[in-house]
Image (cartoon, rainbow, N blue to C red; front, side):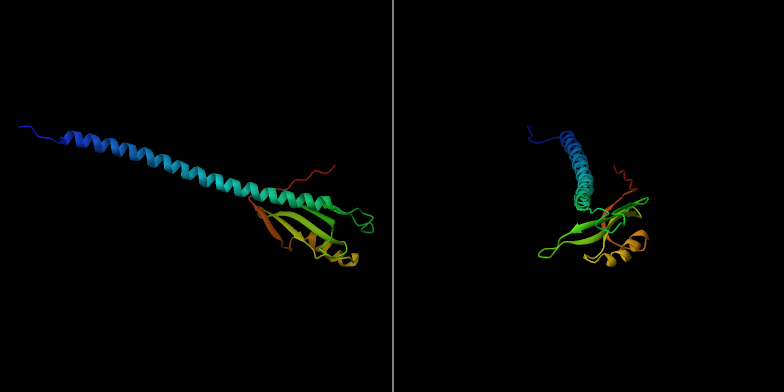
Length: 152
């Protein structure tokens, strides 16, 4: 009697090979998914830092000198905080001044800004506000341990 078909041993071997290939595929897919999540997180951090540095560059490029502020220092670096006065020109308006503070608070890089004004006397309260830690601002980047500045 000549029967056609597979024996039980052949079926068990085929199922075992198929299971082995499935496990390898699953592990490969899992590692790709984990790598993608890690890269997305790193990309988000990098993009945040690029935006923060671009804003920092703009702030520093528009910094004013001491003569503009009637002798008040235009740049104060104090621990994990940098405060500077910058010139800004809102669209369709004459140039004005603004106080900008960069600081790290609770692992977050923050940027705080005063309202734009042409009156130097209105900037004085903002210099005082910038020196205490009660002010709040825009959260730019998390996971920042410290802020160390070197100026030359």
